Length: 201
Image 1 (tube, rainbow, N blue to C red):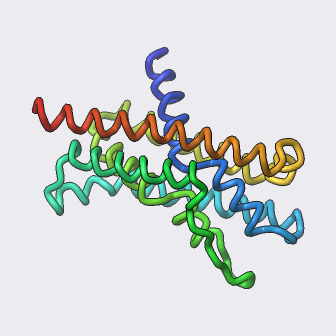
Image 2 (image 1 turned 45 degrees about the vertical axis):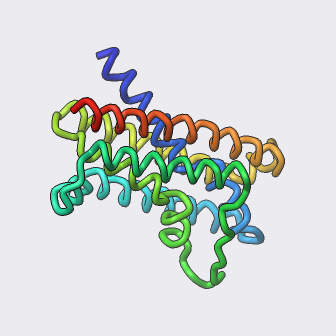
């Protein structure tokens, strides 16, 4: 039981950081600048629900991509790790492109859920997890961890204005760069695991 809980905690942290939480927080503050607090909170809840649904769809049906295209899990680990590393580099250098939106449009799904929170690297990581869901314990741990990670993202967005007052823009930028460092480490681990699987299969 203790190992199962530890697995959930570990996956929750992993899922949380691959969704680039502090970059998402920074973008949320930028895109909702000038909005009423009540509308901001409503939007944050819609985004949270959206990323939960999208992530669960990828987790449960992503394995079909492997069977359709004949891609091995280890090969996909290497590809997803490379994308994750590129995301880390972009976050660290501040070169993630700004996204222009129409203020009259609903931004909860596009561009916020996809691609700001659930980008290519996030999708790649979830697809790898999807392919590994062959046992009930793995399914449960992935689903619980995904829900917890999404709720943590939602909490960040719901408290965005409070966190901005406490941390300031500089503090959020620092946390974004720390996220980049963690993503770089995760990407290295994914690539190493994938290469080991291909070489010693």
